[in-house]
Amino acid sequence: MTFHPRSVVEFGLLFSRISESLLAGAPLRQPLDLIRQHMAANAVALRVEDRAAGNSAVFLAGDEAGDDATATAVLGHLLESCHHISATAIDDVEGSRFVLYVFREAGREGFDGEETSLCEILAGQILRGLQLSQRIGASEIERGLYSSVMDRLSVGVVILDLQGRVVKSSGKAEEALAARDGLQSQAGRLRATCAKEDRDLQAAIKAAIASANRGEGRETRGLALTKLSGSRNLGIIVQPVPGTRRAGVVTAPTVAIYIRDPEANADVESDLVRQLFDLTPAEAAVARRLTSGLSLEDVAASLDISRNTARAHLRSIFSKSGITRQTELVRLMLNSAAVLGAPQPQAA
Image 1 (cartoon, rainbow, N blue to C red):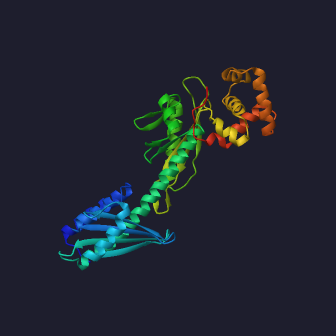
Image 2: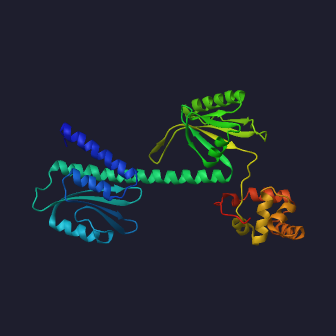
Image 3: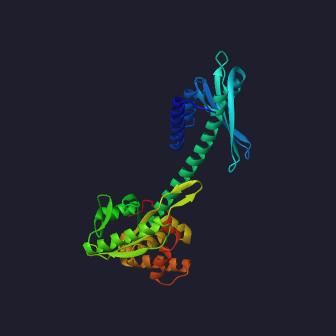
C-alpha cells in the first residue's frame, strides 16, 4: 500500500483525530463519522461481537444512522443495497470481535485496493484505541479511589515531576498547602515555611528525583516541619516512584509527598460503625464522638443525654466489641474499615 505525500498527511490527521476521539471517551459514532468523511462514504458501521457472551452491538454513522434499536436492521439493509468493504480486528484478551464496514451507494464507484487496506488499518486502530481508553479509564478510577481513601485517612498526597514541580495534589494536601502552616506551594513547588527545614526538604526531593530516575524506590525520607501556629509538627514522607509499564500504559517516574497532620483525626461514619460492630444507633453515635476525641461528659452533652446514659451505652459497646477501655475503643474504631466509608452528614 502506497500513499502520495498529500494523502500521507491526510491519513496522519485522520489517525490522530480518531485516537483523540477514542481516548476522550466520545461516542463511537464520532470516530466512525471521521472515517465516513475521509473515505467519501455514505455510511460507516462497527459491529462489536462479544463471543463469550454470545451478543453483539452495532454502531452507525451516516445519513441512514438511526437509533441503537434499529442499527442492526439498518446494517443489514446497507449490506444488501450498497457497495461495501469490511475489515475485522479481534481482541484476544477480551474475546471480542470488531468488524468495520464502509458503504457507498450502489450508483457510485466502488472501493479500490488502497481503500480496502486503509479499512483494515482503521479497524485495528479502533480496537487499540478502545483498549487504551478502557485502561486509562480504569487507571483514573483506581487513582480516584486511592485518593479518596487517603483523604479519609487524613493523609495528603502531592505528586511532583522530575523537575520538582507539583503536578497533582489530593484534597487533604490542598488543605494543608492552603493553610501555609509548615508547608506551602510557591510557584508550583513545595516549600517548607522554615528556611532551614526547606533546605532539608529540597535535598530530600532532589535525592528522590535521582532515585526515581534510576528506576529505584530507595531514598525515602521522613521530615518533621515546624508549624507556625505552634501546634505539633507536620509530618511528611518523600518517596521516589519509578516509572512503570502496566497493561500497555507507560507512566513516567515521579516523586510522592505524603503529608500527615497529627492534629487531624480520621473520621468514622456512624452507620458503618453500627453495621460493623452490631451497635444500636445511639451506641454508634457515642462511639463516633469518643473516637473524635471528646470526653464522655462532652459526648453526653453533644447528644443531650445524661452522663449515666452515655456510660450505659459505653458499657454495651465494650460488651459487644470485647474491649474494656476507652482507649482501646478509639484504637479499634480508627483501625476498622469504618474510616474508609464515604463521608455522610452526621447528626449534631
